[in-house]
Image 1 (cartoon, rainbow, N blue to C red):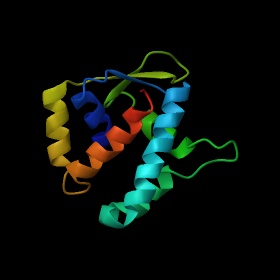
Image 2: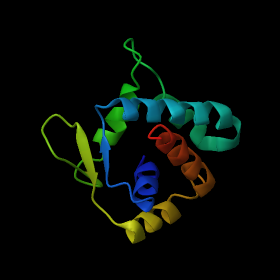
Image 3: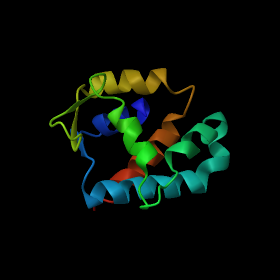
Amino acid sequence: MMSFVAGLSHRDIPEIKLSDDQYAKGVEGMFQYFRDNRERLGECASELAMLFLKNSNGEYRQFTKAIQGLNADMLSFDNPYYIKASIMFDKSEALEILDENSEYISTEHIDGFVDAFCESFK
C-alpha cells in the first residue's frame, strides 16, 4: 500500500478522497489491472488479492482499511471520519519508497496500478 501512495505522490496527486465515486471507480480499475496481471505479479499476488475482496455492498473495504492504516505514517486524515487523506511526503521521498519496495512489487506494476486508479478521473 505504501508503494501505491508513493506512486500517487510521484504523480503530484496530493490527496485521496475515500468517499467519492472517483475513488470507487479507481479501486475498481485497480482490481481490473490486478485481474489482468495476477500471474505476472509473482509472490505478492496472494496478498494483493485480499485487498480486492468486495463486501456485501460491493465495496473494497479491505483496500480502504489498508489506506486508513497509513494514517500518521504516510497520510494525514483531515477529519475524524477518514474521508480525505492528504499525502504527507514529496516526490523525492516517494521515489525513495518506490525504490525500497521494488523487490516486493515492481515499479512497472505500481505504475500500472496508479494508472488504473487515475484513469477513473478522466
